[in-house]
Image (cartoon, rainbow, N blue to C red; front, side, top):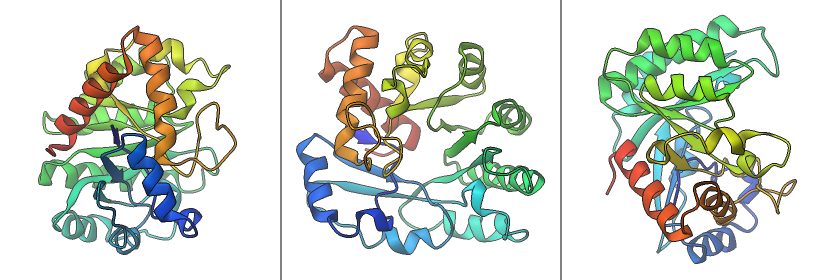
Length: 253
């Protein structure tokens, strides 16, 4: 399995990282894609090693971190995006949950991330919180046939999901799909399986039965099991299809 979105480099894992990675490998995780929070994330990512897991880096600035970065994002992002081992641009997007003080800056940053992604022919990874219509409108404006990417932590309506698919996005399915009252499972079951990828967003949003605990890549098996039930297929088939989807999106073998 491929964890397409994991912040495994964060301090929450420093004390027991070798054990966390061993558990991930034992659970069948072969690759971990790591979205950046800011430009300093790449140095933290470079410190990760495991004999049976491939780590893949992304370059970007999280929308909650753009408030103090008002200029020069595009130029620096373009330079970092060309670095060896960078497979995607992000995470970027819009987050209106914590504050709407810097929405214009967030939108500008999102557009800059999209421009770099298109120029470098790499996917863009989208964070969306309480901003669905705005983010999809911007993606629609930026889509010129070259933009591809993932709506990370998908939790939209059926109509929003189909619009995202029409815009060329894949949907990142994480722990929220296992939450009883979220309703995400019913929407996901109506989406095409060949456009879904698995993720954890570790250390956040641990799936049931680990909800409320620190999330980690090994817990992705619970999300995969939920997906298997929704589509009435085996866990092995879920693994195969979502892995193929991830490799196709990120163009890694």
